[in-house]
Length: 426
Image 1: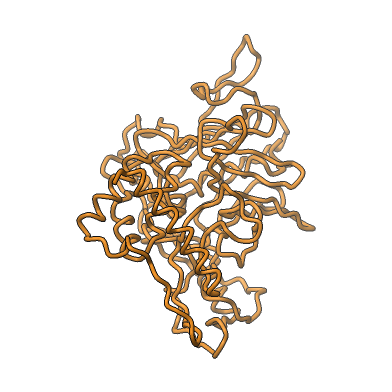
Image 2: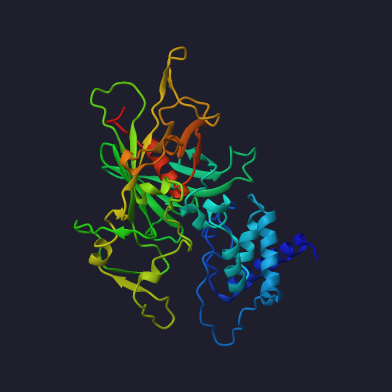
């Protein structure tokens, strides 16, 4: 049987399992298939659905003939699929392999390397992993002014009809009386903090000079500093599968312009969860290898009641004491600064070399490089390497290229700061 035939049968079996689950009343736990899910959303059963008790007379769910394949043959099949489907949307087949059953999922997770190692975005957890070292991940951002929504896609530029554009992350500006904030999600139609697709948020101060990036999940190998500010949250019951945390992982600061002189913006990013030494040769940035889901593995045992989903009661102290403080590492945090542009006399404007990825002049365009203390001994070549660049290529279309040690989530949140109003910086 050819490889294409195997993949085709896997896809048909996955669709069949999904329909059986819906008829049986068992949630399939798919990311990106909530109400009004887009065809560009993350496919497949990821994370793994929780087992549900069977009702009287209900047949156990059959996993199909492929569930009992010998491990050696299964490993070979998944390795062939992973190697042949390198780009989206064809890479959906790799996700389909992880959606068959637990044994397929475990082997798929072993075969698929991290984003830093293979340079391919496969599962949602790839959005929290640092990018590759040798080349940037090229993306573009589409802005919708009517809905104040910002969509991050994978690719060099928008396709002609948009059918092959892979949606990575979506953000929406939420306006309040005193300030605005950005909620970041895996899908473009659900930005609720209680949703399983919520991944983080961005909060500015009143002047628009300082932005705080919050992650819904704690970074690995990091310590949360407690915040003594009182919390306004009240005790309530929530589902254990929903994300609850808001972890301060980065701060973006814009230089205050007192005399309102015309010129490029000056910004600095403090990455609380990334050590500065990680950009050296042999250094390692924190790399999550699990799945994007709730904090249930860190919670006490859940109490269940008959006919109801397990729930946990949280007090205001349990939510405010550990989740709102900044994330720190045992080493000096990584600092990023915008690369200083040069003044072009003939064009009468500030210029940066974006290597053809930016074509429209805008105050939002920037490049970020590492700002490292000389005592750390980081080579000058590493400090000059562009880690993140963002710029305009058309009306409401922007390019975003990022690389190690930033993740797609961190890079997208930093770029969102360019869209917020900054009355004290311009």
